[in-house]
Length: 235
Ligand SMILES: [Fe+2]
Image (cartoon, rainbow, N blue to C red; front, side, top):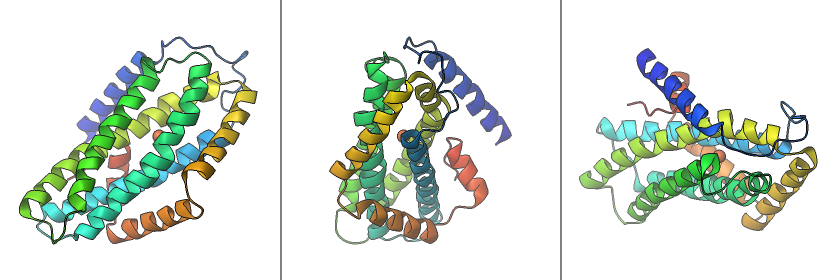
């Protein structure tokens, strides 16, 4: 695993080098570097919850690999969390608020870091859609479906955890340092308005409850969580 972690570190360094030269206007004196920002802090908190549920989804795949049965309902609940919280609440908020704010100060949507993030959102949606369609079918999971779930989790978990690592370590710090203070305040307001518009009253709290249930039902130990958070799936 040490060799694999070193490999990931080198991969992230290469990605960072590729992303950093993107031309964008910086705030006048870089005065936002290191300053806390409500909207970006919230997005990072959401990442932590998503990583916890990803680690549990990986545990569900481990159960299936070990020949234990898992209910179709549990698969559907995981997929609901990724559709409703990770995508509808979190990714769309990034797309409609953060990426818009970054675009307004010179970050292109069609190339560079935002384009990379958008393409990963699209890839994640397609994997989740396939799992969602399967989870809606009746009856216990078939052997073929179990194989497809294991394959889907093996692809989706490292995709989304690697994506989160790039945002936490590269994109968000870049946004904090480049977006001027008054636009960061507008970003806070935009994110709050987005959530009121996109999510029904109480919906976010219900999704947190769902996450807590899934994390308790399919626990991942701290080593497994760290491996997932570093962008791997662990078998
Ligand atoms: Fe994100």
